[in-house]
Amino acid sequence: MRLRFAAVAALAIAIASFASDRILAAREPASSAAPAPWVELIVIDGSINPATASFIEDSLASADAGGASALVIELDTPGGLLTSAEKIVKDILAAPVPVIVYVAPSGAGAASAGTFITEAANVAAMAPGTTIGAAHPVEEGGEELKGVIGQKVENFTATFARTIAQQRGRNEDWIEQAVRRSVAIGEREALARNVVDIVAPDLPGLLAQATGRKVRVAGRTLTLALAGAAVRRARMTPGQQLLNTLADPNIVYLLLMAGLIGLYFEFAHPGVIFPGVAGAICLLLALASFQVLPVNLTGLLLIFLGTGLLIAEAFVASYGILGLGGVIAFIIGSLFLIDTSQTELVIDRDIIYGAAAGLTLVILGIGYLVARERRRRSTIGPEGLLGAVAEVREAIAPGAPGKVFVHGEIWRAVSTDALGPGARARVKSIDGLELQVQKLS
Image (cartoon, rainbow, N blue to C red; front, side, top):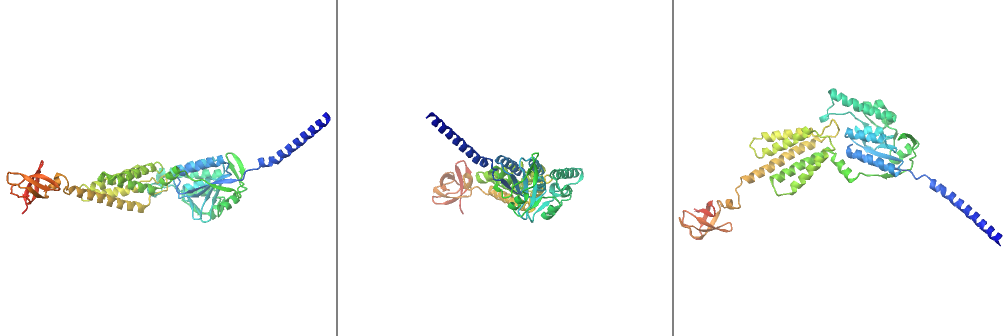
């Protein structure tokens, strides 16, 4: 009996062991299967600024933390701040995941700072009908940098560009010409001259063409396998979106003008409240944007000087000299407000001239209304009684005061004329609480 029990137990243990081995074998492929590839996509459509740099830095971190196979930057930019471009290039070159910069859609461009960002990518791509280049540094007002300073800035930018191209094995001579001569080319020529690696009509086509390419990431060589990869789009945070909006010099300029007009209106008409509050908010937003844009202090002071001269013109008889000087100072300050030696972004000239005309009309118009109101005789209080017509309620005789009704009130009154009840008299002067009246002829 004991032998039978031992045999049954041994058989049961053998069966359990065999089943366990089969279950583990069945589970092993599932646990070792590679996860489906995916890429993170961000879209940069506008200037290169600190908000853009922060967005790209955050996206690189999130792509790495989430296990993305690559970060794709869809780029369309007219340029921007060189300092922000340098930070972005530094982040891309040291990125923990492969970075693909895709100049798209058709009609887009990677100008100036955008050229450096595109060349820094592990894979540089362009859509049909796009352009790249025109990275020459300029000075305030958009003119070419000249002299020793201009040569230093140009040489530094050219060397910076060549270093990026050398790091990624692309055309060093062309990118130097893009800096020194503002050369720009289309996608076909860029591909032929080894400026970019791929020309693709859409993102799936780009990922398919990028598959199989070997790239260097964080000191190691990786082979891209992105064909059919899922695409997850990341967006800016609200703070980054606000900062990115404030990086537009035209919006900043309009905020500055709105702030000046609002505060002037509040000072001219105390108690209205809304223009003052709105003006203060606009002015603070404009001042906050000066941390993003390179602002020329001389230009800003000229704008404030011009505004002050226009305000003074409304109250001082200068025969137009203060007003003319204010308009000139305002326009010159507006033209120099953005330091274009550090960015290609400028304020639209039509906006400057329109704002100058509008601000002049508003300030002079409000000033005229304020001055007219101040010259107008008061219609309330004791001063408002002067010249008013009163009705005699209690007889008045020379040396004997009576009472009159004027402006809804009964006043004690004296007169050199004899006035009976119901007579009408005009108020000539006020002495304390007593009126001097005169019979109407």
